[in-house]
Length: 123
Image 1 (cartoon, rainbow, N blue to C red):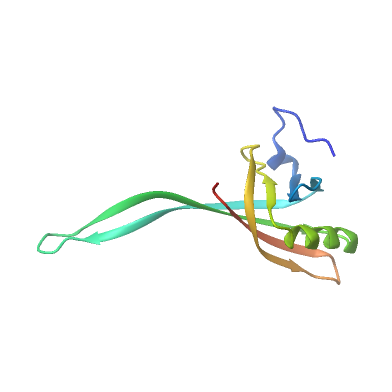
Image 2: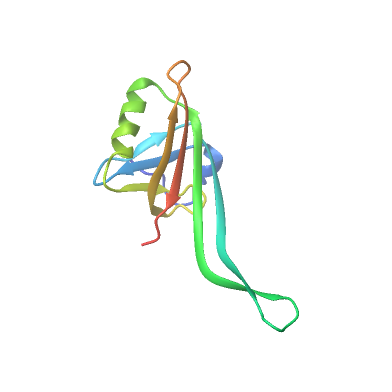
């Protein structure tokens, strides 16, 4: 499978690429993908003082949610990726290959609707 060249905005095209450890890229067409990025913030209450301080610990957590429709053969390929030792995602927004943990897989056998949740594994 050939990856899209530089300058192509994959998020707008609705195409997402996912692969297991040392596997081939699996292409998802007409895929809706969203990302939720949060920073780890702690609140420190100062004794004897007024108010509190927010401390930015600098760690980020990115959760990607993929939705679309997939045939049973595609589901089987995704299940193999889900069970593999490592999972990689080509982030369609930054076009960078990132390691992720495949957190959740939902598949409806009636209409082929799927929903996947992937959490970035910062290495």
